[in-house]
Image (tube, rainbow, N blue to C red; front, side, top):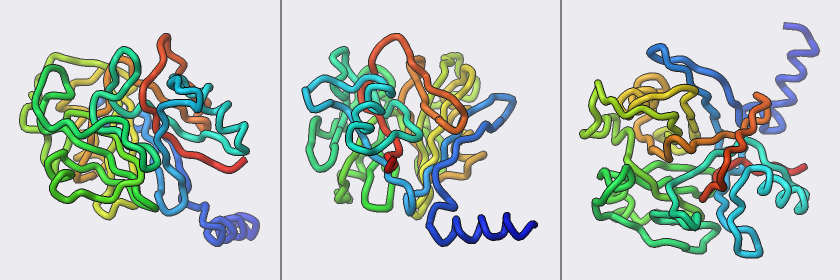
Length: 246
């Protein structure tokens, strides 16, 4: 290692930026994924839904422009939970201490109602995916949170209703968190995948104890370091992303 490279590494460690968000391509069981790893010790992870005028941000570029006006910028970003036609969240949604939707813990139609579902809870320097009933029991003091479903991985086990040979396949996205809550891994499949294989990617490849499904078919990702910025044809509901100072 050259002296300049050693110096760069030492400066990165000293500034606390050595483990900042990184996005990369990964392959598991012949299916390709894009994974963005967020270090909660150094990265500011936030949820976004409505702009100041009450309209949904809807698109990564709209959110980026709003942050830019505040002297900030958007790094990695992804859609973060299911939503109704008006972009209101289907399940629990908390943003900077303000609750927009209560916790939904009853079964129902669609993927959200395929219990158990779960909640991504954001706290200072921490992020945790929690099964909904556990979330209600423990009542963590989240600053922001989003509920979606189904859970992909629950305490190291795949969702009990996933079928290994399931024929429902979509481009899917979701999130998993480390046991200590210090790292969050956001993944989107680059080709269609069923629930079983998507869950196995988080459990067996990323080695995460808990993971949550965000959505399928409309799944989108912004990853500036990969020159990727999915636009889509319709606005999104909740968006999660890393906020940076310009």
